[in-house]
Image (cartoon, rainbow, N blue to C red; front, side):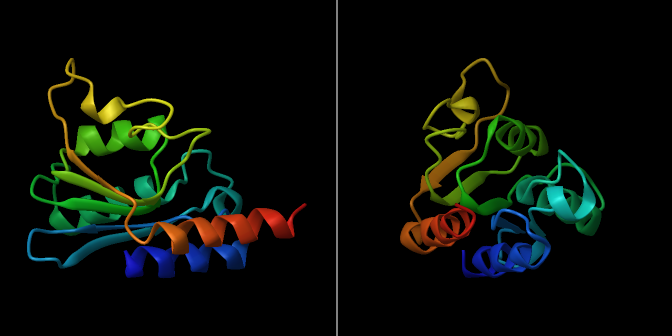
Length: 143
């Protein structure tokens, strides 16, 4: 989570919402890192999770990320939760809950839908105060 928080802080330099993500393999080696790049790259799919999943798949040389863990500072949205399911990560670890758009237990629970062929384990609230604090400061500075 500390590496994801560092990536989130990097997003601030481009005016992006400070969300960061990493994908680690079973040994804990980071395979991919991502941060929000929607503003920096004018990309509506430029969410930290998608960026990290793409980087990990490139590193691994395949799209299946079985055995891996996606670690992200904010509860994934529907797009990112779906991407995690489709990439076959074994688990999703996140920091802060997202009551407005969270799809891993808050507003929706995409990853635990029994109709899907893959359901990753979810670990929530890891370094929640730090992750939430970054977001709160970011939005407070814009109001």
